[in-house]
Image (cartoon, rainbow, N blue to C red; front, side, top):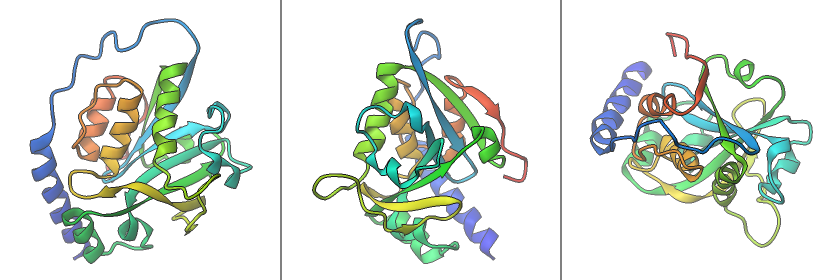
Length: 222
């Protein structure tokens, strides 16, 4: 029954979002050659996409929440619906509410160390090497996604879903046309990649492969 519900939701997202995608430009000459670069990683499973940044590459005072992960080499950022994302198990009511009504959002941040591909062997991993100023725009987009009150870092809402992770209040509202995959696409768009905005995880991955290096594919079961 749970699998059927997931399939129905997936078909709903594909039917609506698939009609809203726009053509992607050719993958040539996106960035000029030369100059310092930094890397961002896109992690994609069947439903969800997140962005990974190396902590030592974070510029200036951006993402002060990094201090909550003192031992981490990398941070994974994912954006989603407030209730559905924080639920420990699949919740159909939360899923339908998230897709059909505008709702509050959260960021899920995971700290980890070691090779990025080894961290998430069940997810497709795509690496992007960006000129430093474009990389900083990607990080700037992530930084502005945190909903902070006053100065300093956002306070965690609680523990995350796995590993060394936490949820944080986020800016923006979640709905069928503005999902976790849309958020990840917007982060890469900020760095200059001409991706479409209203997309499923599979479409995001297909588009992203044109601009990044695929480090690993998803296993068939995922």
